[in-house]
Length: 393
Image 1 (cartoon, rainbow, N blue to C red):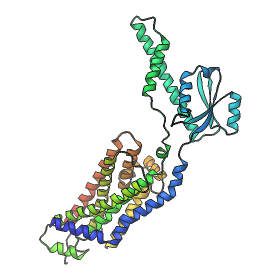
Image 2 (image 1 turned 30 degrees about the horizontal axis):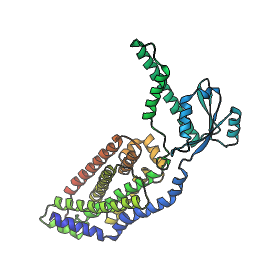
Image 3 (image 1 turned 60 degrees about the vertical axis):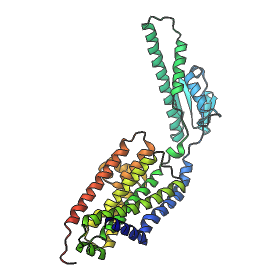
Image 4 (image 1 turned 180 degrees about the horizontal axis):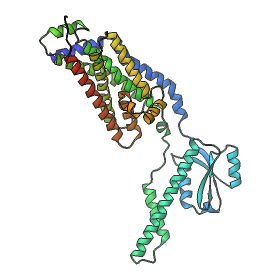
């Protein structure tokens, strides 16, 4: 009976044209609109090689670390070239900056680098960041040099070569340094989260399948439900097979959407393919659980239940950032509990953490919260369905 009802559920759901549209076609249509709306924005956000100046005074001539680093970042043979550098006098640098021919310039005073800019912006911030990184490397060299000299003296060696020690430390830093690379077309893709919310919405729309499958098992909702109620078959077996069938159909729709986003729109989901699949499957099960609990606890018509499912899904999607990343950020900052119980946000946040973070702590936190959400929904449904009684059928 389990297998028979599983097959019957899958066939019935695939034949429901309205369900197929909302769960298969509608997310793809939204994906197309997102791509049309955001593709030009993404292209505009790619970092370009920009012009800066360095005041070529006597103090700069003694700054070997800065000279080498800036030369590397402005080398035409470097595929990750960041700057076009002009070595000029202080007066000329001011003139270039006033005429907006450079984004900023670096000048050394009292052996300390100073970044002079006309206005704040992406390139000015990046220039300041680069100079700060070089400064940190310089500090590391000085500290390691001092430590090595102390070790040489402690070992009774007073004839050490300081320049040799410094060069050895520099070589080691150069071998282990992390080079700046222009990957701004992905890392500055703040609209990437829109596609994540689309997948989360697709997962929650799977709740319509779960809702329909459970409605078919309820005597007050369908003829099949009446037959099930008077049949000797275990109600739990019928409900379980119906839920699994709806989950299988929903996974097919999710796979179609993921394939469309990956191969047609070229959305970059990162390299953790297995983790992406795991999160999608858990998120889809959360959607099924949401549909099951709505079907179980609301005593309204099937159309009203479907409307409730769609409304709840869209409400969760908006809060997870579908209408703009700002709202998600504001909620995370001021009322984080809302996003911790929002399954759409947990799915979105899981994708976000895989794409931007080096650790998996946040990813697994989202998975755990999704599983808790699923368990709570299924427990509520189980209790509600067990109490289901009818005066007449």
